[in-house]
Image 1 (cartoon, rainbow, N blue to C red):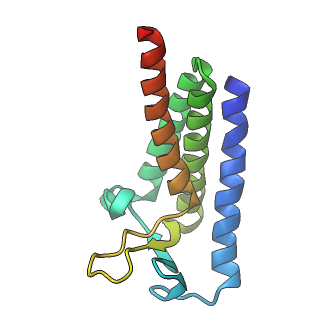
Image 2: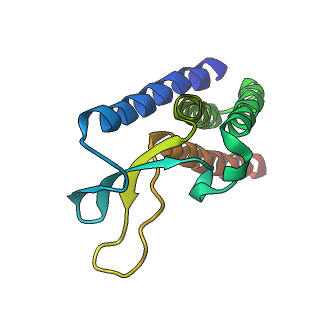
Image 3: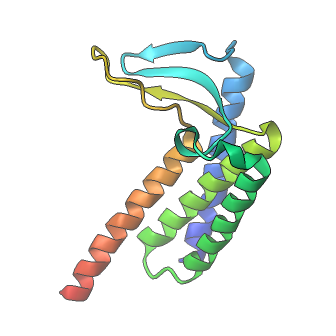
Length: 157
């Protein structure tokens, strides 16, 4: 299980960094410009100096990077004890997402966010911009929840 999970981390890092490179290098984007892709989805350029929704910005990039790396190390230890493929995959993609964002913090002192989703035809605000690494972290957490639900059912069966 360990190798499976660990092998997904570099895949996520590569996809994350490649997508950010494409946005930064191939689009003539200056914040806060938005490029409509289709209704409900834009490409934008945001340099997020905090964490989720821009929070904890006062900690600075070095503390946030150290915190993310410490959490990643803890997740590697959890991954070593993972008993299911689903949990191993979830932890691997979370680790990859966390490291992808750490790379940004070390390079730019901020995380590059560029995906903008919203509900067209409403006055609802746009969801805060995010990136591939953020998506991987959210999907990984969802998979951990699913794994917990299925593992609990297996124990009760």
